[in-house]
Amino acid sequence: MEKFKAFCKRKNIEVSAKRYGIDALGAMAQGLFCSLLIGTIIKTLGAQLGVPFLTDIGTYAMSVSGPAMAVAIGYALKADPMVLFSLAAVGWAANAEGGAGGPLAVLIIAILAAECGKAVSKETKIDILVTPAVTILVGVALAKWIAPPIGTAASAFGLVIDNATRLQPFWMGIAVSVLVGVALTLPISSAAICAVLKMTGLAGGAAVAGCCAQMVGFAVMSFKENRWGGLVSQGLGTSMLQMPNIVRNPRVWIAPTLASAITGPIATCVFHLEMNGAPINSGMGTCGLCGLIGVLIHSVFESIWEEPYMMALFFAVAAMLAWAGLLRRRTQETA
Image 1 (cartoon, helix red, strand yellow):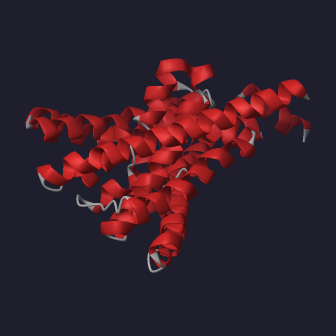
Image 2 (cartoon, helix red, strand yellow):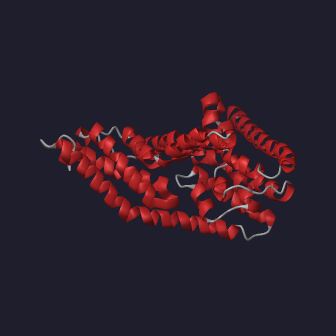
Image 3 (cartoon, helix red, strand yellow):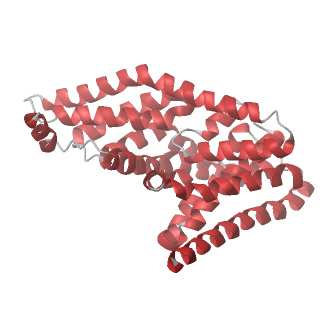
């Protein structure tokens, strides 16, 4: 056992919740932002401005989300260069095999493949062959083995959302908004779930409201620490960037989730917001403004009247969460 511990220490293999649940998870979220999310923003701009060149750039960026996440995870685990570069193939396979659970599959499989690659790195005279071969073989084999069940589990979560869409508008607004919002923040693909469920209409509007509550909520709550960079990256990118903080302190998730439960029925029962674009936009929220654009692509007349409603809804969420955070700080100071 002592020899094994010494070997792991020499190879910088650290099995801990911080290394995997905070460092690797945070890096994965950044990799997702630098590929899928920024690609979505650029593609949306290209589509709205009528610039095919931007649309193509966005499409290319979105297509490499798996490799980007895996390489980011390897970087967080301090993998050697040969291991790091080999993780690109592992990420592609895990994301493709994982379906709706692609990001979670990439996280688990990239960690295992990276640690195996680190274990054999620089241990032989033919390291240039052994290290990438072990990393890729282990990673892709795991992708074929465990990524599909992860995708199935994510799809099962999608069935729960699908059942929620059959409820009355008020209860459907609460359930769909909360569930899709939670899926957005978790390392699974809320967009893929909404696409599979063909979530449009009133249910799609509730999903957009829930996603926006999570993204705007976390952006506002963390503004004091992250300032404008965090506001933009979370408000227009993804609330998944907050997963390491959620692992540290799950209570930070309460306010955005409560906001989702409030904005959902407001969207369905008061403003009657409907998703009229592609179903995938229902799970995007404010990422690249895709969710908003999907709701606003009625006729010009309807868009003019809906836009103030949507903006008022988001500002109400932001104000509520900011007030909740201020109240919490005052309570702590009093205590």
